[in-house]
Image 1: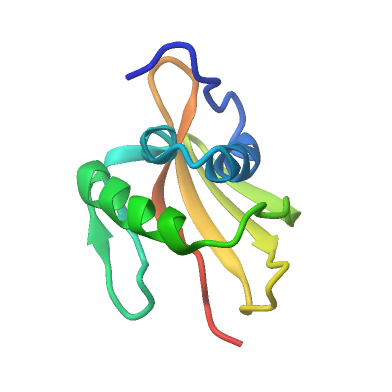
Image 2: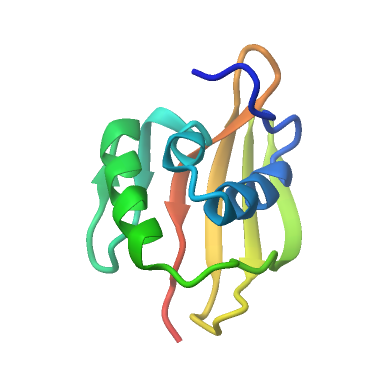
Length: 120
């Protein structure tokens, strides 16, 4: 893992870091925002499991995604111990984005479940 990349010190940091790394076309940095065993509900209708598989999906997405990605309006975070539910109002009106993040032993946060699109 590249120790020079900013790490999420709060669950709300994950959305901003995701947009920054997308706009930099940094698939490796994007994958670092996910736990090794994370689940990404993308492409729509499927589940991508594990950081390596998530990185591969994100690499393909970055090849075709129009940039820049906008930073979306965050909705209130719901926390329960070392878990947090985050969500944003999507700029592309896809219905909603939601993620579950987990605090790591070092105090940083990673996504463990990411549902980037919930439908219109």
